[in-house]
Length: 328
Length: 291
Image (cartoon, rainbow over all chains, first blue to last red; front, side):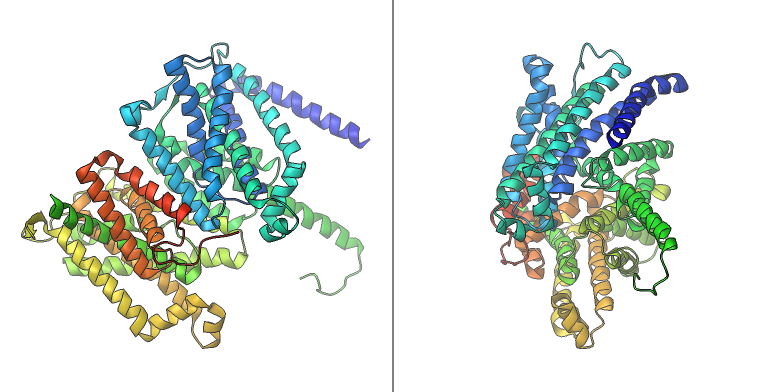
């Protein structure tokens, strides 16, 4: 029975996901909505990557946009200078990003919370400055780089299904990682570093591994992003984009499969809604962020879960005899 | 050339030192990291502009009022946002994010009145430039240096010689024990945030005549202040001043003898190097390493 129900749910979800872009195309009359959905899909990969780092292994990164940009520039520059085919450069971009992540993580994973965030901010600024004034200008400096995109993905609906494939793959991989020995080691480190160490988990190595996997996801996402938008500039490596990723993660709820998805979708919609404010966008974004942080510190996902739990409790409480105030 | 770079490096280093001081004070008092500090520089610059240029007050009155406003802002931030979150027992990342959210607001709000154009801060002194040790500079640049040094000394005396300063240090060291001795720790933490904000705002107002006033003025400077604080040893007042000074000098000298293009790159590289190799900084502040 349970399996049947699960299967039906999965089928309904699949049908909805397939029908959605066509529906939006019909309602909107153009592809803008589908493009936003494509961006959401790309961001889901990046934020899921950040979730592996922050939600599961408990390390903070305020410079994750740097990995995003590293992925984008790796595939972009390889294409521009060497004309390397995309099916090589996109995976290569993710791998390169993971290697950089490992190099940064080796010393950085020893730092305490606040100082890790400081180090990652500095890393993001370093990447930005490097791309902005690169030696010999091989990154085209402040102009950013333009690519021609992927030839067989002629419209955003095709892109949607292409990205949907990657997101599904990424989330399945994340699911099996989280439920593996390594995933459990990450969670143990998050909960208590010293206890994890005592149980024979190699804390330093696992922290580096989490960083590398996370950078792999984010690098892949950046590599897909640059071909989707056909342009990227060094500005993306700055703190603002990293904060956006982190906000999406926290907004949806960290350490879960659905959290990043919910966070990305809701925040992208909100960002589209405040777009008409133009130059005051950041003001509303900041105000929104502040309100959410103060009102709903567990994220949307956590908030819904809490509400459900308290609802269940109340339902059960009705059938129980009253027993004073010992729950408060 | 050398003396020119030395003087200029010390001037900008003094500013970095002031900003770094704010970070260190907050870390000392509450064990938190405020990412809004950089944008309080911007806030101070705009406040100074409002009082001095728009309202036409004297420079001393504007300086004092700017300090007072930022002081109030710091206390409001601590009591209205940080304390509320701390009482809710949220993950520390939310506090970091809250300060970032406030920094977005501060970066964006002045646009409503001043727009996005860089505002010129009117000249403060009648003499536009003076020469010290054969180095000619804007008068405001020297004033900047003098004020930052005076502020550092004043802060040192306040923290070590007055009763309230001692109480503040005690509250930072061990809140519970301080509370038991009858110190109002809530008040002293608030005042620390206020002081840090006040210092940053003064730095911002001093920078106005040199750099002009624009919304992103503090964002980069704030991160340089960070770097200064880490170099000196995060949480150490004197380390912050020294670290800021070192950073200012290194930056100016690389710009002078090599190239100005890599100025920011080098500053962040130094910050990362210190974090990775000597995270306790020059003054060996034991606050950073985990495992």
